Image (cartoon, rainbow, N blue to C red; front, top):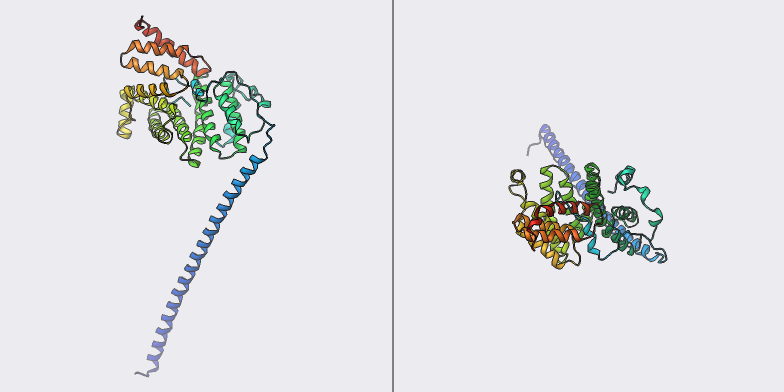
Amino acid sequence: MSTDPHWLKGVIAVAVGIGITVGSVGVVFITRLLEKKEKLLLKQEVDELNTAILDLRSEFKALKKKVINPSKRLTLSSSTSITSEASLYTALGTDDEFHDMSSENEESHSNMLNANSDDGLTTANVDKHNIEPSLLSDDIFDQVDELFEGSDEDKLKAYKILVNLNEERTDDIEVLWRLAKSCQFVSKYYTAAKKNSEKSKVVIEEGLKWASHALEMYPGNCNAHKWFAICSGARGQLGSTKEKIEGGYVFQNHINEAIKINPHDPTLYYLKGKLEYEVAVLSSFDRRIAGWLYGEVPSGTIEEAIENFLKFERESPIQLKDCHLHLAKCYIATNNYETAVEWLEKALQLPVKDSEDKETDIEANQLLKKYLKYKKM
């Protein structure tokens, strides 16, 4: 072996270089292992914290229910008598809309409720003494549902109650879907009674936010799907042709999902029938737009619409003025004028509760004048 001092220095330098390199790699490797371990520990601690928060939240809700004073009940007056929970839907329906059944942003609440006095629906008209707790009692939902069956003013009261209720029962599914529903009612008021599409858009956007949040929290809830569908369709109807078609697709998908969850809800078949009718009578221009954007339009024929409307008539404990009107329009489309006249007369025999019913009666009367000559004698 060479003992040349220069050669030895070279060997030593190479050895030292290799040692430094290996040592550096080892340090980096160990450092990364430690960092990974710290991240795993941190994630575990976060998961444990989330679990603890959920447990505390459940315990808090249970505690709130226990401390309810049964003597405190919310007393509300409604201008109409109540026959059935399902009859709240009788307030809805006009020909120029896909789906007329049926935000946590406080500023949007204020904008909607503090409308000009000539709108008729103002917070000044709401008796604040009627909006007192107990908001924690489930009986409050029965009272809200009764208001849904009443006049335009009653529906505004329902909205106010639900806004307050959401502060006490955050993320409660029974509150969320009813908030979406109440927004849809008020939006329809601005469309039908005041012809104010801008206000109607603002309110339906809020309803869509409530419905979307309900779906995020409770993806398997039938009412969450139903009111997300309704609000989506209503928003689309207030927009462009493209938005209308998009709303139809969303509506169809979520109504079908709601039927899978609860096939025994007759109102879902009424809603499905309305979409099928609207699709069946789409103009050639709208069909071309839908084909260009999506390749096809949502499915629906007059025959399918009639089938679903009649299914609702058979299975629902109540009658809907709008369902009668749409059955008449379906039979007109198939040239069965005699049967159409029968359904028009049935629609006009039902009581008028609000501005939506007034719009329905106007259309029914116009059609009856045109086709009365086909009445069976």
